[in-house]
Image 1 (tube, rainbow, N blue to C red):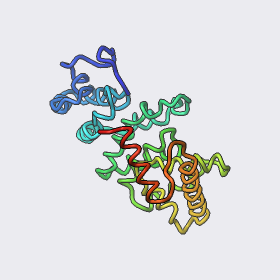
Image 2 (cartoon, helix red, strand yellow):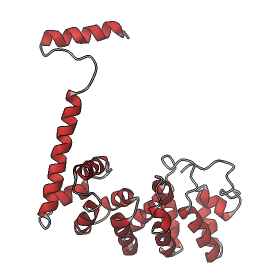
Image 3 (cartoon, one colour):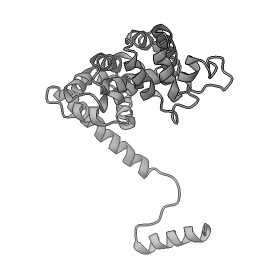
Length: 239
């Protein structure tokens, strides 16, 4: 997700591609005034090859999504990018490779682009960066659409102790809990609800065990012991 300032992939600031890569406000005006093929090529380069130095502080997805709508661009390039053979390669680079494209699809879905929603659903069930796609859908898709994803997402985790631990971690680390809540309450899949309930209980038990096993100084249980422990800490580390 990080691009060096002298990286050859960043075009000069006076070009259309350079304007769009930098997120310049007048980049949209230049893109709409340019030949459509040139504008589409520049937009494609930006969405599929994230030009931002730090994606956590530069939110460019809405900028590209709006231009995507203005140009009436298709989703074919994004679909090909998401479902390329590279998506299945190990190495943990799926977020940096697909994150911006998925965020753009999320904004398009919020503008009622049914094709973008369908593409996010498909990627959530089969793509490597499925958590990101699911989080995009969690704040935009309807309940029925999210419920339908449950069986495919849960099937990613084998029904073994290790698989259940990975499932618990995925549910705990998700930015948006809505899909997991819908799956746990889905009457059409009682076995799914039972598994998520069991995993949640195990996660709470494991957290309780970690707290009991925590190392370090701890006070006794009486009020006097707690106060003495606090006073001792204050004297050791005064303001």
